[in-house]
Image (cartoon, rainbow, N blue to C red):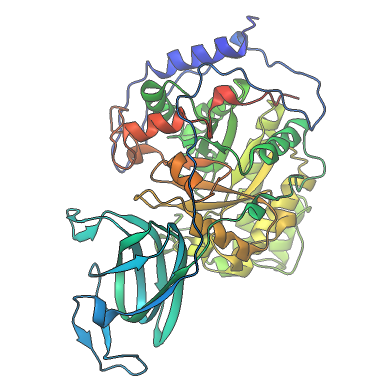
Length: 545
């Protein structure tokens, strides 16, 4: 057996990655792979240290960019603006309950722009008084008007979208953490969809993420978690609030996105995230499992962190899909009062036969048991997985979004079954359900994740602060994003996500595996991967058991 150092393994991985060729389109997966380092070529190094110790990494190259300092001058401020007075939009008055001369109306993609003069550079809170019908109003700070190819908009920083459904009385909706500089600032309110009737806005001094957010619990929810898993969780608590781990989603069975990033930046992400749809027999990507799991194990062997989501194709007898609109699977029927988390597959089948559980519940449990075998294989290879199933359930659109009761039952059952029945001690449970109603509680969650699809450079501090609604003491991570975060913007807003994971495929690269700069410019990528606030693979400590 050939023994290789971590540096040699990394160099070999890079060489293999940069030799790939790709075939990619918007509706297919990249179908090329990267040959994994075989067992004969590698040997996992084991070390004996206490769970609380993490050894500093020897980086391959020093960071070129330092974190900036920002001066925030807090000053009390509040100003109310009647939108019919400060915007050029047509004034209406046929609805009841408005103040002043009337209100303005914006339909889909229409916008209202106004200027507010603020006394100091700090964070502000904006409250819009409006009624609406199934509407999303984007709040944009600054920027200039341009045509994005579909409609006119402003290229400033989007500070969040206000969602309102059938609100017939003028009601306040608030966005906090808006960074404005002293003097005049342009604010744009634009309808992403639906119709909004807006009466007035209140701009007042606000806040951003407090240092108190970074006081967390780092104990894994599994009391029998492996030593490596405990070390990873301890490391997370050491860096949380100071550093952000770089992460990249990959097209299953390849390292195409990572190869493109390395070619541009000279660095590798700390976290590689795949999708367990490749290991689900009901998925159209089932045949990619072997290559993907080999690559995940290889990444772990190099010292990297391994993540997996699960684009779960519904166990429907006729129309399997992950979108609720594309399947007839009745998720609401999954919930049961019975705790079957530690029942054997044979017992669960008997429960189904006797009518104690529904067919939907039975099929869900079969899928859960199938994926358990994947984690068993990875555990045998010493791989700890940051696992984030049932993503964005509380935001709607997926079959697992159709019932909060069933969602919570499935999540809690899966956690207990994997941790206790199967003895899987290599899982860090990452919940990114997107809604307090769908939050299963800290006893079932190791990390709270948020998926952020903003493309205007926002830090996500409003969403970060919104995690307070979960009443969680867990660290928060940006589990999926379209645009790579700007380290300076995170510092400006004191929003130090534990990690970010950049989207895969045509979010980042084309059919030839080349960077497209569609959402993240090459300059931004290079700066992120060489910034002292962001952790790359070569900067990780050793976690081996």
